[in-house]
Length: 356
Image 1 (cartoon, rainbow, N blue to C red):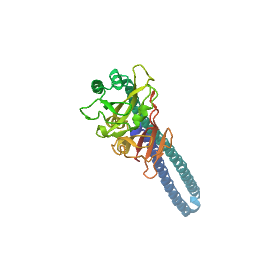
Image 2: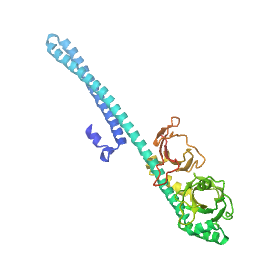
Image 3: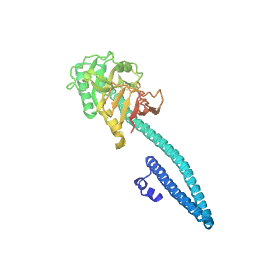
Image 4: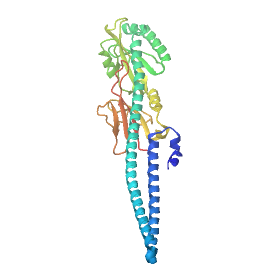
């Protein structure tokens, strides 16, 4: 039996919980086969002992000694058969318990791995968006931006537009940058050739703009959940905004607002598609980024973006697993931990996995 186990492919490579489950199943089958064979042999021995008793009875007095031997053989056979049954019952029960324990361990290990993958996805986007908060606060202090906000003449607006264009040429993750006055009127943009006619348009009703107006200092920033921006061809954007103040005056009067529109879709898609799911599990696994309302912001299968709300509800927990009883799926999740000074917006990384 042990030679057979050593010959299995699982024993040749690094042990895994799945391999242990398969080996336990093999041990169970081997024990059933061998104890079954023992019962067959003891059955044959009983038949031989019975035949011997019959022949001993025919021999009369001369077969009496042979009869005693035959009865002993039959008794030993019965005892061996009883031991075989007892061994099969006890061994089978313990192997089943071992299979269940290892199966549960394998399930927990898989759940923990999926939670880690969910954390990995949301951490990657957190680090990415942290850089966006740094960008908007830095560029809000650019002299061309400050001068245009302070004195929005046509020449100042043209210079600010040129400066925003230079920034965009180096930072390809943005669709556009907008400089707005305190009333919400766009003064300058970075890509007037791609998105013409935006100068003079109003964004006063946008949540990100209203949040930026209330920022206490140049060290602060405002942000909005991912949405489609009509002024940018309904592209998916994550907008970050900071107040523009006089040069060197971190808490000076607000001169305007700088908004940067992060090109969300390709960046988020690269993150969810890049999560390292095992090839054997890829077809039944879906990697998601969702907002605090469980709205899908990115999905590895490209479905439901900005329109689907996932059913799995973390109920405020930081991380864990939700089992979908109706479909048999499990959903592992981890809430944004934030990165550096970026607190996050309560987003979650989620991994949906259907049964194998």
